[in-house]
Image (cartoon, rainbow, N blue to C red):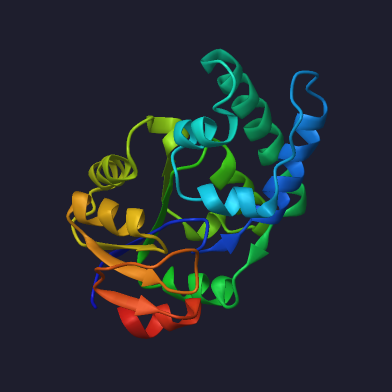
Length: 208
């Protein structure tokens, strides 16, 4: 598959941050007098890939809309700080593969996360030098497919593939009119894809 640009999902594609996200959120929730709950790694994995407002509704739906927003903002802000310091679990081969791909492709990230999350990832691993641009739900407040289209228009991208792990990623790529590569080692299965990888390093063979 020959493409000029590659756009990446984050969770389940580049890394698994669920354990540390859960740890950071639990610290925040323990300080809330009106909250009697803990967030587990399984809880976080169950909502990975969803827009932040949908995550708020699923995890904090028992609270008022204003309180849900407050809790999500507090958890998201601390999560970014926590991940910038502690990182997550980087999938095998990501660093070497990204470095090689950056020599032949323009690389981007589009995620359904809050603002600052992608930056925390890039700062922790020093990967900022490999990526031309990033965009997230926190910046656009629109669907991932729409965010992909915004990023493509901004950067003059006409020939690209999106690399992600769940059906929503595939649907977003189709919405944006680009190819989709399924990261089958991630969090979900996909019905329709143009290619599939079982390790991140396999991406080199798929696109070069």
